[in-house]
Image (cartoon, helix red, strand yellow):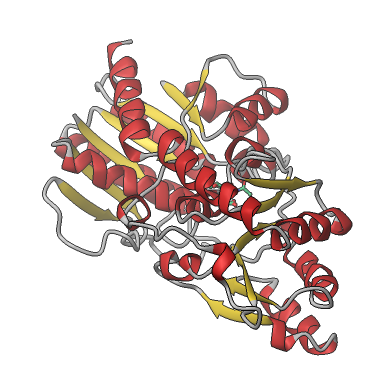
Length: 373
Ligand code: GMT
């Protein structure tokens, strides 16, 4: 197949999934054309069957807001015509699905089919805002096929919008060294008394991740356990949390590592992964932790409960319930056998349910179905 993919090229789960999907499809022999305003950061080397088309946005004094969606539409039209695309796969509805549908209309009776993958806040936060709602609904309904990254997100989409077609659930998948690395069996029992427990949090530090909850959580844990919290990523809440660390004299217990290209080495040193989000359609970072055999303590936000299974791969607390987070983390830190068991379950579940071998063919079959419609 000839497949166009449009996505956000920067850090963020939807861009990661779109890029890793494109790479896998190219490996399978499909011709893949990425269309975005910058090279997706994981497309950093030549690969057969992979092409990148940059969307240039014209700046003009009249444009207080340069119309990226229109420039993207024109680029999709151009690539679809020249490369004779069968499918244009839009990752994240805003504005990608809208631009894709408009491009198909401009192309008239071309064979181009639009597949839209909903990732989360394009529905639950930004998408349902009155500024976008009707346009997002229109673009979902006008797509030739729609997927969502969890059952939760598929249901939520139907609850928020008036949807006239099936939304296929295709989970996010493991990629790169997360799948290949041989995780050394974690010997939780053998740690020295003086070693701190490493807790790890990875996110884009936006307010919906509730990163501030980690302050009282660590404050209360530190009296019972030697703990260090590795904070990976960056975003608007980072400096707020750093300030709070100074104010509450917690700097010895927090390490801010910033954005990292590969998280495997950090996760391999971590005892637990903590994700207190208030919105999460899937939680790719929890899956990454599980792939490295790190048990998770997460909130019960959205699709997170389909990834981190309470009592099997980790424990789940309700959103914002600091007591429950502290209790769950304490339970796991004081029970090496339980951590060991959850670690093994986490790695097994990640590989069994979310491997690229299992998930990528689901996209291929879906494309074939949509083309055959
Ligand atoms: O959070 C966002 O708006 C960004 C988006 C992204 O591009 O990473 O995240 C969403 O998509 C990820 C990949 O499918 C999911 O793993 C995240 O759970 C989801 N974020 C939210 O639902 C908050």
